[in-house]
Amino acid sequence: MKTKIFLFAMLFALVSCSTVSAQFYKRKKVAIQQQSQDFVEDAGVGLNMKMIYVDGGSFQMGATPEQNGEAESDESPVHTVQLESFYIAECEVTQAQWQKIMGTTIFQQRDKANSSSVYGVGDNNPMYYVSWEEAQMFCRELSAMTGKTYLLPTEAQWEFAARGG
Image (cartoon, rainbow, N blue to C red):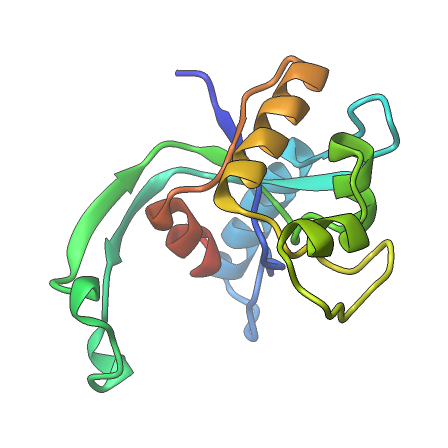
């Protein structure tokens, strides 16, 4: 099945080992293979969006015991989720990336949101004042520009990637 590409707002650590062992070398080999599948989306406009390959698998989704009752009621019961492999952006969509695809600045987005304040302004800062509909439109525009399928991640994909796949 075709691997889908998702936008995501978190940095990832590919390998984290403190001891030298056969398991370490096996993980290192997997990480090197994974890095070779990562790519930078340019979209013909210098987008420079790093996409990380997340190998599919299963995991226990939901509130875990170590959260000590801090979870919301809709985060339980814990259940097994199976995901296919996918791509996810290494970090949030930046203000520069948003402007290259959507053509609006942080100030224009602020005005559309009827707000009076901005914070964290700059090309490499995350874009904000974006509605769910606008985020979907960003994905459609990026898909049209590249011929690839870009989507927002599901909650399961987000959680799986955040846990390190």
